[in-house]
Image (cartoon, rainbow over all chains, first blue to last red; front, side, top):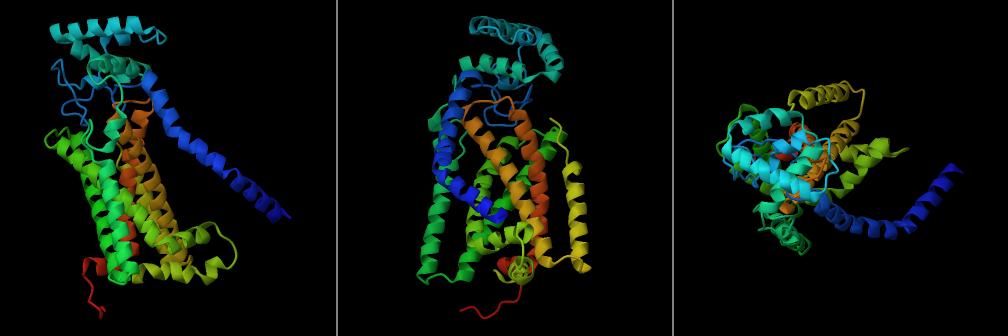
Length: 274
Length: 110
């Protein structure tokens, strides 16, 4: 009885799936519209007082104090942090005075670093308003196509990798490539992606911890580029090994004979796949 | 921002040693041991990759969210975990890894 109820629920859920997909499809548009109003132009990582050379390619230091302007909360915003609902005109006025102060008086930089240590997100939002005026003033959807503001090639690389997979899959189905070789090519690529992303990521953590600034930007760049290879490679990896992937859920969450009958295939498969 | 390295690695390393020991002692099946760690690597990949993807989009847009800092923190923490679990993955699939890298003896390949 319970099973039949659950099946009915699943059927109902599947009927509403199209509606769900519509909602999910609209989510990025809603998110982009929400971001544009309040948060555009600040530190994308939400960092406060990110020192040179910064943790992202958008590092900008117009006032020359060695701290990324995007991550910098102005002195006035810290003092006026209680008035989070201030209108846009007054906040613009505050930012202008903050910029002139930091140009003229180096002490303000020190004050900023001490005052904004425990800055809350509202201060970061204020900082975003500071820089949005003289930076690009918001987001550009064209940047997502690859060669935009940050120089990462997310979409071109993804398309290239998926095209390459389709090509090798076609060769594999036509018998030009053996299944073994096909798997080996993509296993090597995904391994390269994981190793590259992992090594550059660990390097970045140590560089941030030790305060090493040299080569941080190129390493960040390659971390992001190799991450694209890793992500697309993982999706391809899951596609190639979709049967063991499904069995993993059966072993972990399934019931009945799957644990005893089919478990051997799942556990033995690792050693004979490549 | 201060990132913890030992916090995510030590418990994960301990957990792997436990499930590996249980499997070696015959208390759990190999399929369960493998499935647990495949599930964990998938989970860490989802969190780390998802957070990284959102951060990348924000970076490209030049936008920020109130949770950006937390996203970066968890991206790094789950990334460290994923790096470690990837090593476990290589350990679990060691024969396949050796074959992939050409370290094992070549069998007749048609």
